[in-house]
Image (cartoon, rainbow, N blue to C red):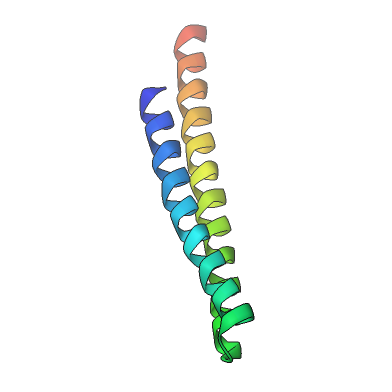
Length: 77
């Protein structure tokens, strides 16, 4: 279980950092700059952060389910 929580913690920090950068780019493009491109880049970065978190969460959940199913198979034999 320790490795799963380490991977989830790493995923959370990476996704949180990318999310913060994406929000900053979006707000800069929307409020300060006249470049409409920065708004799109900010939205894309936020979506990327959400995608990173969801994929990391899926990987942790699938690894844990595989480990639990193997443990269950060993107990039944």
